[in-house]
Image (cartoon, rainbow, N blue to C red):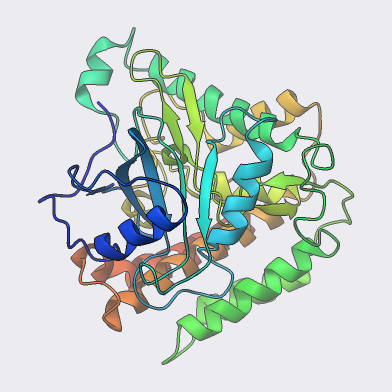
Amino acid sequence: MTHSFETPLDLKLPGLDWTQLDTYLGSRGYSLDTSVEPRRFSAGYGNMNFLLKIDGEEVVLRRPPLGPVPPGANDMAREFRILSHLHDTLPLVPHAKLFCDDPKIIGARFFVMEYRPGLVIGDEIPSGILEKWISPTSIGQHLGGKIIDVLSELHAVDVDACGLGDLGRHEGFIARTLRGWSKRAQLSWVASTPPKLDELVEWLNAHPPVKSNAVSLIHNDFKLDNIILDPDTLMPRTLIDWDMGTLGDPQYDLAVLLSYWSEATDPEAMHQLRQMPTAGHGFPTREKAAELYAKAGGTELHNFTFYRVLATLRLAVVFQQLYCRYKTGGTDDTKFANFDNLALGLLNFGMDIARGRHF
């Protein structure tokens, strides 16, 4: 199993102007192999990724999605900078090759990076992988541990040594993050604000965490399908999707991961997420995963309920934003059509976390 691509293959794929790209790359000293049709990776709801061949090498061209882009999201310049500085320090990060700041070339700013083929696991583990594994439960134990290992390794990076010490303003990160997602929520629910949204924001404002001096490079959307795996060993090969990376509180990064981490006893909204296969296969629970993270980093988690609630608010807003993109014609993908109900379910789940009903 490797990456999957959308079909049919077409030189007129939305989001990629083949002729303009060929001319631009040529002006920069690169040779685009126009005999090889571009292929778009099929995974994900956000940024668009295309497999091309440049100078005889397969590479990935990455650009924002079509339609309006939420403020602060899908930042290609930021992602290119992170990849450029982090590759030597954290080899899991792919090598960035070229950045284009001119949106007229293909309709948006974009960059080109190395392509590392491998296995991407989304909401389900492929049956062929399960059949080859030792036991139905050991695969979840293995993957759960590796996810936490990669996150811990990321948070241990010396940002000053790799040139990313000024990537973002880490002072006031959590307060700024809460304000930002609260504002995006108000913009996303245009017609009427759900009562649970007001309740959730009020709870967060009333329960700020004790001041923490912990600062690290954070991914800001860390989950299993952003880790490309060796299909035989299920060992991590690559960590991708860095457009929201910044300096911030590592507990928030962990909480974002756990916001995708469903469990068998969760309410329906968490199963509708269809992001990671953690509700079965022997994956550790969210609480156990948090314990593994604390042990790996030799640290303690403080006021972690706040971080969990904040990350769940974030996820609810993300899915409401995706629904708005669908309603305004930014995509005709019918998977987006029920994301408004999913967002409401996540708001309810956030309040369950706040009340201690779920970790």
